[in-house]
Every structure is written in C-alpha cells, then in structure tokens.
Image 1: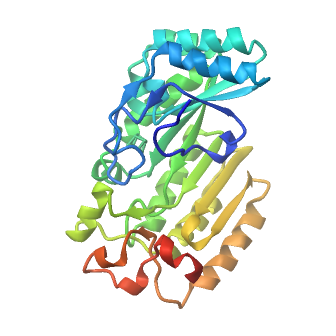
Image 2 (image 1 turned 180 degrees about the vertical axis):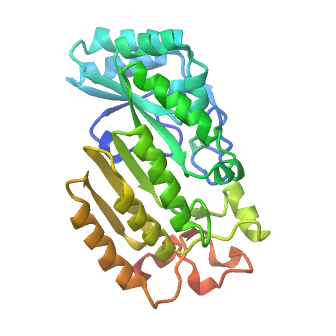
Length: 312
Ligand code: SF4
C-alpha cells in the first residue's frame, strides 16, 4: 500500500506492522503540527485495508504487534474498528495487540461499552498527544482537550483495560515557562500513570500555524537550553513505576531515554552533560525553514535548519 503523509509514531512502535486505516488526521488543528496539514482526511475502504493484510500474509509476515495509522485512527467508528480488528484476527490469529494514536475527543465519543469491546478485540495501547500540563497552553495550541477532559478520558480507557501512553513537547509553553510546565505535566503524569512518555521537543516549522503567532510576537519560543532544563525537571519529578521514557531533541542530536525510576540518575546525569554543553553559548532554536523567513524577533544565527545540520 502506498503510504500518504509523514510517518510519525512512537519509537516503541517501530517494530510493529504499520497498517494504515485512514489518511491524515480528522482533527488537524493543533497549531504546532504540520504532519497532515497538506492532506484531506479520509478513511480507507475496508477492502484496501484487507488487501494490505493479504499482501503481508502472502509475504510470510506474522506480526504480533500492529499499529493502525494514521493521525488518530481511534477516531474511526467503533463498528469500523471492530471490522478491521476482526480482519486482523482472520489473517494473523496469533497477533498480540493493536495500538494506535487517539485524540481525547475520540475517546469521549465512545461509550464505556464500546471501549471494552475494543479492548476485548485486541486494542491495548492508545497514544495521546497530551503536550502540556497547562490549560492555557492547550487552549493556545488549539488542542482538542483541556486537562479535566483528559483526566476523565484516561480514567475511562484505563477502566476498559487499555494502557495510555503520552506524547508531549518540552517547549510547548514558550519562553520562560519551561519549569512551570515541567511541574504541571509531572503532576498530571503522576496522577494518570502512563505506560510510556514520548517527548518530541518542540520543532518550530514555518508551515505550522504557530509560526504566524511567533512572527506576530504572540508566542515567544523557548530555546533548546530551556527545553533541556524543562526535561531535566520533569524527569526529576516523575513518580510512575516502570515508566518508559524517550526524549528527542533531534536538531541538537540529543536523546535521553530509559525506564523510570530505575534509570533516573543516569538520565539526569546525561541531561546535565548536555545542559553544560549549551550553557553560555548562543541560543539555538529548533526552527525548520529557510533562514530568510526567520521572524524579526529572532536572530538568523539562532536558527537551526536542515541545511545547517552539521553546525550543532
Ligand atoms: S491531533 Fe495529532 S496529528 Fe492531529 S493535528 Fe493534532 S498533533 Fe497533529
């Protein structure tokens, strides 16, 4: 099957069989996100999903873990998801789990009974884009949820037996608010107990709606040193057993990962080394675009872009 869009899934799902069931994201409004802005959302017909299962089966595939794409596959109607899960069972009766991305609205649109039926049919991990622990940030970024709604949605999916995993972004709260966000999101995670946290530290992309906010001075981005300090504070405060954590700062080629609380000391020490490297240096921002389009309030030298990849 030809894949449309940009593949973006948690590193823990890299070995899973990626089975697209939709193109794009049915929400597609988060201000920082560029993954699917160029695509018109549509569900793939079941025959096309089945063709892909057949193709993999005919090649001798026997996946145990299957990841349904794309941006929020959990938004499909329950009847459609159950139909797809039944097909998966027909082609790969020994599969162990089906995982996918979900928005909070997707969960809120399903009844407790539907959540339980989906669990019984094999759904296990739902990845939610939590992004920030601050309500005003969620509103500003046009997320589809506030914190009260996420708490409720997570409680319901956990009651149905599913595991929730969190996507977040250091830097989401903007300049000067990294530590505040770390404290709030740590409190949120400590209460809701995700199985995994994936932190894709914020990228600032000229095609994202957020770019206009930066250019207009309504959002002042944090530099990468502040993002690293935010992450350090978060790891210090996380208090969830057997939590898998994976944090990416791609543009400075830094990644910190491990299992908490076991690896906390090692992870903090790695962060300290990286923070030392960026202290007393010119600020670096994870902008992705041509230097001529840098907003006026940011110096061109501060900007990271793919053509300067060797710089950092
Ligand atoms: S829900 Fe996810 S994929 Fe959809 S716009 Fe928001 S961040 Fe992007």
